[in-house]
Image (cartoon, rainbow, N blue to C red):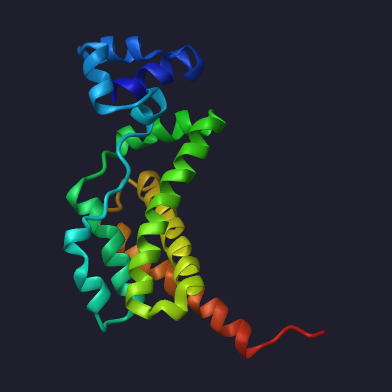
Amino acid sequence: MAAVTVAARNGLDHTTTEAIATEAGISTRTFFNYYNNKQAAILGDPIKLDLNKVEWFVKSETPIIDDLAELLGQGLKEDPLDRALLVKIIAVVDANPTLKEMFRARVEETSVTVSGLLEQRLGTGMAIESRLLAELATHTLTEAVLMWVADDTMTVEAITVQIAVKLRALGKILWQSDLHPASP
């Protein structure tokens, strides 16, 4: 919160780790115990998937879309989101291309983890499909979180629902394009 507050007030270029530490009431040394740099502090911790708790995903026989939504939603349940803070983070990220790239890299990290789990579930011959589905799912998570930020009536639990809804909608679009090929 301190990092976002300072960056929103001063701009990213004029935000220092010292200013963040002062705002938080901690030493700079303590700051570096938690974050490598000001950008990491502004973005906060990435959504974590507890790999010790995901064996169910690999072994599940329920629809993969429901399981993907549950898997990605699991990280949100274990580390609840703060809507007001996310609004501020989004404003700072939108104003700074460097932060956008760092955010995309974090989404990619989650995507790589999900891809590995999907490949375990679907089989080694499905590496490309696993990667594509993981990227789609993690970007859907991002969009669902943005929907939640914009809608005060939406619950955190609804993010998981939205992931499944949007993935199903994409599946229908892909299925329909297969049934109705484009004219040459």
